[in-house]
Length: 112
Length: 118
Image 1 (tube, chains in turn cyan, brown):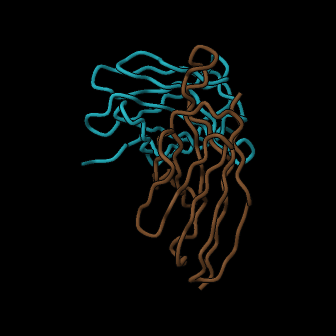
Image 2: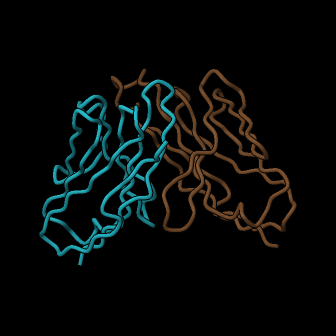
């Protein structure tokens, strides 16, 4: 069974731009979560979707948004990029019952 | 607010040694606890998942224990190998019984950087 895939793997953007990251969960998984990982803050939860509904949200500004489609694929959008948004963005999927999380390889975003 | 602490932050051991990584959490109202490893620049690989009703889980040379009442978990690695070198992360999922479910998210510790020397 294919694992969680994330595209693109690397991105370089300029301050003020916006970016969209994509995540395809493991087949059959209905829950997708997004995390931001930085050296200073570690792994921080962004939001979680289940069957196209946002179920939980972390403490990030409104510039960070997401959505989930009917096929469980998810996208995350960051508008008006800031230098501090440079991070590894990780997506994880789970069946929804045991809640065991399976992570993708991440998207490395660099904001200049 | 759930806080997860991992001690030590870094650990260096010779190959073959048995070792223990520690994880503590402040809110015992958890649904489960999961241990991951992360190789540099990569995503996370799930190692073990312990449900709140369980005391331990084993997979190969790995054994994870959970003491929910004291807010502690340990990851025991037997006969360590250089390939075990990575950052090990502990994460707890809240049970949602507090704050209307706002603690249902997965909260991570900062990790333990393990180096196993040949």
